[in-house]
Length: 410
Ligand code: SR1
Ligand code: MG
Image (cartoon, rainbow, N blue to C red):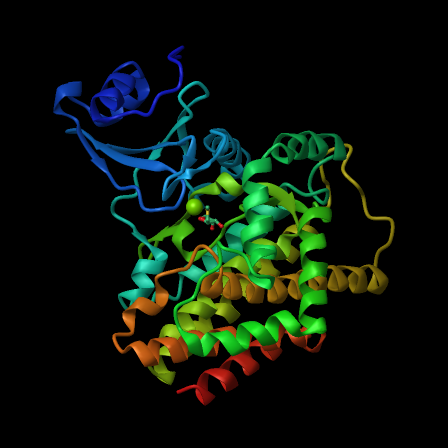
C-alpha cells in the first residue's frame, strides 16, 4: 500500500502506482513503460483513465479536491472511498451486473476497476439509436438484488445499521443530490440554467404550483428519512455501460441508504428524457417497452427474493403474519416504491432540463426549435406527473400518460 500523500496523478504517476500493485500489473502484462494511459474523464466529478498493456486493460478513477468541471467548487476527496465501499457491498449481491473493485487507496483516493472498454455508456448508445431490449430488465434485476440484499428484509438490523453508518458519512455527495436534484430547480438559484425561452412559463408554473412543491418536499423528506436499502444514488443512463448482452452499473460514488424508488426513479426519469428526444412515435415505443420491462423485472425479482426468503440469516426480521394479510402488506410496500419511482423520475427530468447538470439526450435533435419543443414536452410531462402524483397507481397509468403526451407533442 502506498503512503504517498494525495496528489493528482498523471500518466507516469499512474504507471508507477500500478507497477507496485502485482495483481493489477499482471492483468496489464509487460513492463510499465509499455502501458498506454488514456484519459477518458467524462463525468462532472473525477479524473478517469484507461490503462492498457499487452495482456489487458483496467480503469483508474481519482477524486479531485474540487468538481472536475468547476475547479472553484471545492469538494472533499472521499467519494472514491464510497464508490469502493459500494462496489464491495453490492458485487456479491448482483454478480456480473457491476464491476470488481481491484484496488482502492485512501491516501491518493484512487480506485481501480475492470475496464469496460468494449461496452458503451448507455446514454450514448441510446443516442446512437441502439435498441437493446435486454438492458432495462437487467437494471430491474440489479436494483432488486442490491436493494433487497442490503435491506432489513435480508439482513439483521445490526449489519444493516453498520453499513448505514458507513454510507451515512457520504455527506458531500448527498448534499449535492439534495441541492441539485431536490431543491435548486424549485427556486431561483445561479446554478440553474436553460437556454430555451419556451421553457420559462413551465418553470414558473412548476414553482407556483402548491401541489407540485408539496410533492417535491415530501420526496425530499423521503430521500433523507427512509433508509430502506443501499442506493446507487445516481443511477442515470450515464452510470450504465452496456453491450446488447452485458450490462454493468458503474459510478456508485453517491451511494447512501434511502428509499428504493429513488434508484428506480433516476433510471426511469432518464429513459423518459431519451423518450422525448426520439424523433417519432415508432422510436418512442421502444422506450415505453423498456420502462415497462424495467419495472416488471424489478417487481418480479424483488418479490421473488422476498417470498423465497424462508430461512433468512439468524437475527433477520421474520414474518409474523402469513396468508392474504401478509400479501396485502407486501403489495402496499411495492406500491410505495412505485409512488417513489414515479415521483423521483419526474424530479430527475426537471433537474436535467433546468438545473445545474443537464444531459446530452436532446443534442441529437439538429433543429433548435424542435429541440426546445422536445425539452418543453419532457418538462411539462414531469410537471403534470408531480402535480397529480397520487393519480398514478400502476406503471401502466404512467406509461399511458407518457404515450399520450409523447404523441401529442409530435
Ligand atoms: C456537481 S455534480 C453534478 C451531477 O453530476 C453527477 O453525475 C450527479 O448526477 C450530480 O448531480
Ligand atoms: Mg457519476
